[in-house]
Length: 400
Image 1: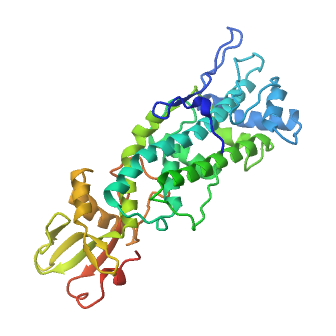
Image 2: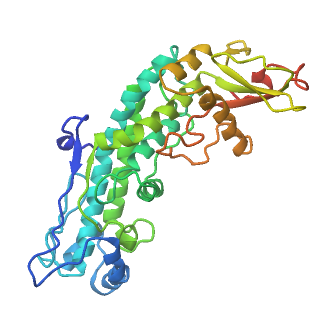
Image 3: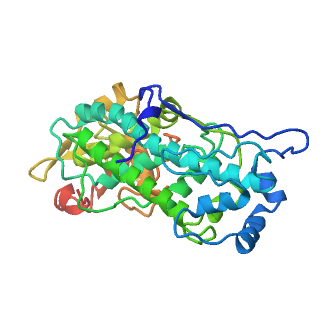
C-alpha cells in the first residue's frame, strides 16, 4: 500500500500542500495567467502534438521525463512521493512549453493529493459508520452489503480533490473530479466482497488499499506511456488546460465538511437495507388506520381511498413488523421527518420506473443530502382490496 506519511500531520487536521508555480521570472519573460483560457488561446494541445512529433523520441519508460528533457529540464521527475517542479518561466524552460510543465506539475500534485485523500476518506467514514451501525444494526451481518457500496462513498469524497486551487463544492468542479476518477482509476468490483459491519476498520483498510493501488497504477501508466497515447498519455490528461492553474491545498477538514451530511444520510439507508427495513405503501384503504411514529396516511380525495405508508422490517420468519426503534432514531437523532423516510422513498421509487433502490445519480453520491434517492430503501406497494389474500410483503414485492 502506498502512503504519504510525511504529509499526514494528524488526520483530523492533515492537509496536502503543493508547490506554487511562479508566473514571472523577470520582465523579459512574463507569463500569461495560469488558467484554461491561456491554454486555449495559445492552442497548447496542438503545440504539444507538434512538439512530440518533431522533437521527441519515445522512451521505453518515463516519457514524461523525456518530454521535460526535450523542453530543457532533464531533472523533472514526477511520481508518487516525487514532486516535480516547473520552476519559473524561462528558468530553464521557455514559453509556451513552460505552461505544459506547470500543468504536468499540477497533475502530479493532484495524484499525490488523491493518494493521501484516500486515507482522509477512510478517516471520515470511520467517524460516521460505527455510530450508524450502533444506532440501527446492533447485530450486524457481514455478508449482506457489497463492498462496492462503500467504494462509492470513497469516490464521492475523492471527487472533491481539486485539479488546481482550493477545494470547491461547485457542481462543475466536483463533476470534473468524479469524471476523472471513474475514467482513470480501476477499482476492483468483485461481487463476492462484502462490507464487514462488525469490523469496519478491516473493510476500510481493504478499500484504502484498492484505491491507493489504483492511483499508483495510473501514475505509473501515465508517466511511462507515449505522450500522445489516446488512453493513458499525459497529452490527453492535460487537454483543454484543466491542470493549468495555481497550487492546491487539500485538508481532511475541507473534505469532511463537504461530504459528511450526504455520506451519513446515504449510509443510514444502506445499513437499514442490510437489516431488511423497507417502506410499505398501501393504496385504497377505507380509512386512515396508520398514523403512529413509524407511519402516516393521507386521504387522496373522494372516491380514491386512503394511502398509507409504514416503515417496516422483515423478521426472520418472513413476516413483517413496524420498525418503531429505527423510526424514532431517524426523527429524534438524525432530524428526519416521516415524509423524509416514507414519502420521499416512494417518490424516488415512482420517479425511477418503480426500480428498487434506484440510483439516478449513478455510483457517486451527490453532495447535497436533500437530493432525492440519497437516502433510499426498498418499497412494497400493496392494494388493500386486491392484495388482501396474497402472501406477506417479503414474498410478494420485495427482494430483501
